[in-house]
Length: 397
Image 1 (cartoon, one colour):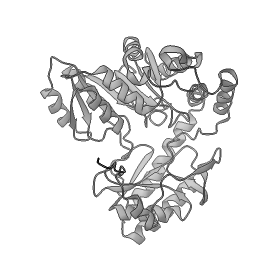
Image 2 (image 1 turned 180 degrees about the horizontal axis):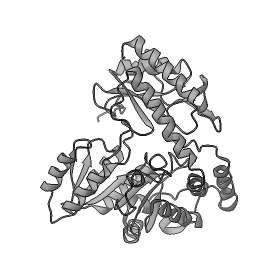
Image 3 (image 1 turned 180 degrees about the vertical axis):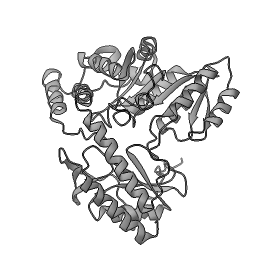
């Protein structure tokens, strides 16, 4: 009989722990409301540069109040999966709210963003169809493509000529779908939506965009990549997003035509077989969408603060790739340089983490530094100062 083996992760955890270069799974014990500060076990108060809460809505009183009221009315869970006994009025209200926010006929809410991607892609595509993905698409997109059984091909990141080559070689008698991220989570750059849409129209392909990191981040009012480019809400056929980043809750969504959404509710395995979003989480998401509408200054402040952060890092000599929105990839080169710069920051009260291969390519290990609407100019100046000091000591800049 063979012995079971312990699964190994992509990183040598013990090696980094022994060197004192490990800052993952930190326990955040408290978020200081209205600020970019958190309290971390064994570290005390830290200035957060690693948050997905781009609009700084965690702890917003209106959102917290909505969640409390939902618990009072519905309790902490539901009676099952959505298709059977698990649907409550808040689920329908959430789906109507996100459809209105994204300018679509309908929307479906799922248990997570990861589930939204793998369920939608595997439900809409079949064997002999072709799905064409950007090389830097999120892992959940890749997994959904593999589950679908469709032929998956990839094109070089944001390379429209290569995308057209892939489209031209796809079977014209079967479904063709292009899938991209709105904002790329490790590079912070933006998909070329006008160019991609034009190619999809030319070759009769559907377009799906993962807006996990662009909702609340792009556009004058935060509705996402279509608003950013001044394009209408009909531009994207299938709009996916999450309730766990700019929206401080949990879950994912897919928005589009009524026909597609109805089909997903009766075919997408992640919807049929996963527990319903808890009432408190659904209510929090509804309230957050309203806050984004009512407080557009948060979106403007996020965009201004990020531009300030990016420009000052670039002036200091950092390689930030083609970053444009919320996420600054502070490229360090080697894994050791990235982890040492991370710990330099952590020891000085800056919460930021290193991203290593295979999540990013070899030689492009980096700190994934993010800005939120809650950062002050003083916060950002301190972050830039600490990063610059550490990078110079390590020979990164």
